[in-house]
Amino acid sequence: MAHLRTLSQKQFLAGQLSYGSTVNIHTQQGTFEGVVDCIDVKAGCVAIVGGNKKITLISLYNIEGVRVLKPGSKSVPIQVPSINIRAISSREAAAIEERRKEAAKIGVGVSAKAQKIFNRLVAMFDSTRWEGTTIVIMDNMRLKPPYTPESCTGGTSLQLERVRKMIRSVV
Image (cartoon, rainbow, N blue to C red; front, side, top):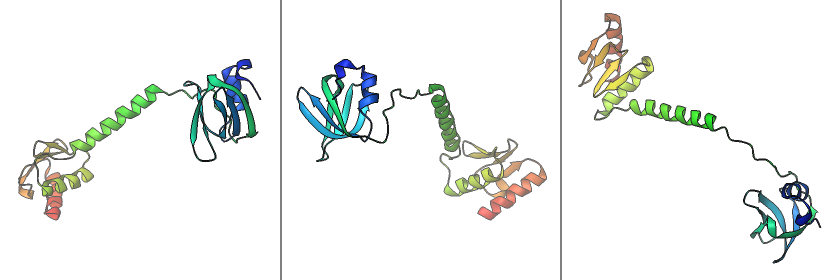
C-alpha cells in the first residue's frame, strides 16, 4: 500500500489511481473497495463505485493507503486543459448575432401570407428585411400591405417584374 503522507498529491494520483482501476482504499473510517469513477484534485476527493453500484466519495486527505487490485485503462490527467475564454466569447457573440438575424426575419403583426412572401424574397435577395410591416427588398424596393404584386414599388422595371412574378406565385 502506498501512503499519501509520503507522496505529493499529484504523484499519488498519477501513480496509484487511474480511471477504471479497481482499488482498495484504506482510511481512518474504514476500507473501501471499488472502481475509480472520478478524481477531483481541486476538491480533493475520489469517487469509487462499489460492487452494489453505490458511489462513495473519499477525501484524498483522509486516505492512509491504496492498493490497486486491477489497473485501469486510462491514467489520471494531472493538468486540466485550459479554456480559451476569448474563443468561447467570440463563438457566443457570433451565435447571438446569428439568432438576432434570424429573429429579424420574423415579421411582427403580419399575416402568414406576408411571412411566406418574405421568406421567398429572402431566398432570392439576401438583403431583404422588415421595416415595420413593409418588406424592403435590396434597399430600393418596398412591398406594403396587402402584399399584392401591385403594392410593390421601386427598383428597376426588371427587378420589379421579377418580384411581382414571385408574389403572384405565392398568392
